[in-house]
Length: 307
Image (cartoon, rainbow, N blue to C red):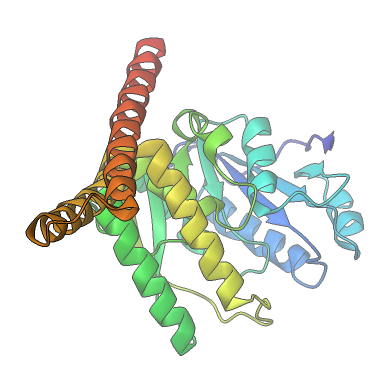
């Protein structure tokens, strides 16, 4: 991984109206949009009289993205030698950020970056502020799968989540750094970050925004995307909320054991393999849920003592 530091950014005026922040932008084959995105971003932030730095992570682009980034002297450029994924790119940017607040956005100019100062100003009352997209049109399959996953995530975290995987967000660097090892290197990084923070009772606020028209839609296999989201939700559920996630499953298995046991008692049959399997599976899974919950709480106590 190569890192090139930026020249100092000069903002208009001497007063700083917002907390200082680092903008992290992952980029992979974005030569058509990256310069426009950076120019408009600078314009918005300078007009808002912000103290900031821009970090762009080139995730081993095969087009001219790297050359265009190296020509931008006022940004910090991080270059991956091979493609590691969206989440890995964001992690690289976070590790090199010098300010306590991190802003993430995309390299396509899809999100209204002019709203960044507004989102940053809301961080006085939150640990993370995420843009909740409205007015977006999705395919029927995407709507159904995203709705199911969102409802499952809301049940897991006992929180309302208007936008599960919004890319435009502001969060505290020290908070997210606690979870970096548990967060994925894939496109589900944003989803996992929100679930991790909500599961640990951090304050997450969502602000409705209208997204810009995207010139070129990324080709994403909806089935692969849905499977990836389910995998991440299961991973985060076991890692951050094991009791709430696993105990209902253990209860269902134990309920199956009771039903088969009653049926065999009434019919004067010996205990079947299915009955024994349901019993031991429910006991093992329930025990694992309680042990994992104790480990999770112990880790939280250790983290609080460090802070």
